[in-house]
Length: 502
Image 1: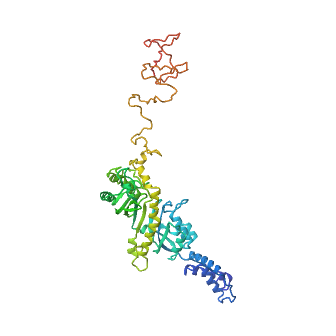
Image 2 (image 1 turned 180 degrees about the vertical axis):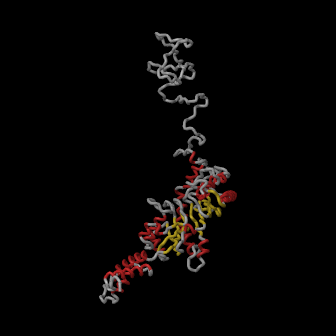
Image 3 (image 1 turned 120 degrees about the vertical axis):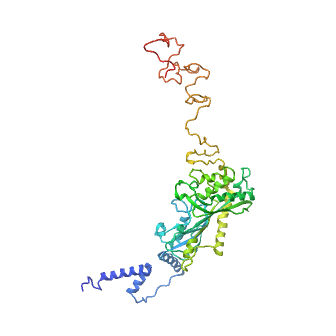
């Protein structure tokens, strides 16, 4: 009694249908296709006895692929982590940047084409919850990079994703992670490798050839200099856009070591590996650049102490082709969630995955570095400019002239106007004798206060002396004027100005 509508009323039946849709969608997490099937069975529980036409094999295959793609997109997304390797030579860095080719752009496109994410998530990284473990620069490669995102948690999708990726990018493994997992925040440290030719440490330009070989004394000195980076320091000089007072400039370096050199294709290479909690933009490349400058003798070892102080130092930046993100570490995450029996451990130390990563490094990273080094030699090109590099504040220094190795005036010069010749006693610099001035200067041997016109001059009126500021030129003393001029000693009421008068 008092109920606003009868149970058999059409509006109540419509309300009941909407209620069923909400229950199935939110409580049982069913897709739209499954909801329609349930509602249809609810309205018509008796199956139809009309026989269906059997589709052809091609129709079955196409329908299966389309249904699989649509079904994956409608499945519930979970927080996952993708371990990937890539060669960054042909890319403008890791992070998405509209208008340029990046690693993330290729990865997200492949994940979408595999059906693991929806179109809305592809266009909105906020809904995708995408985060990378380390942001690599232009041309930098990675052997082990981990990204976190929401996607369909199926391990079989790795094969489908790799089918839509280019050859120089490959997903190695998919991990299930906790709901709040963020690959950047949970990463404890990163390890980078700089695989470079040893001729960069040659002491002179004449020895900078592919036949150069490091000896034990040089390797020991390199290791000693690398240990100066250990610990917490202010790396504001090793990046751009940060000041000495910025707290984010302080970074902690765990270790910095060099391996024994090895010969590949007749050239000697050495691997420098640095592990740090985190790094600022261009930090590792500038650390390597400063090391090379000190070993080659362009600057003394005292510059290491200067770089960590508030003083602004312009540090050379080594090429990015040889830099590789070797590994990322999640020890804290594994200790907290890896032993609960529910979540996966974020590690890739197994024999199978380790072999896959090493094969990718040899085929797609090391091979590109070696090939580019033989053809273009970016390290040799960079070393040619290292001897003219200035380490003072770059904001107060003029830039080097383009195309040649001749520097502009010395940085200590603060005047925009060229200084006069040392023998000149004038406060105002005189023009050079080769100057093409319209007004000729008097000869140095001339003792006249008033300059005479040049013999080649066709002017009837003599020009005044350069030091005279009178608008009307005075007549020459040898002039035969009808009205004699008074003598300078004359006591006239209106004295005439002296020729040297200002």
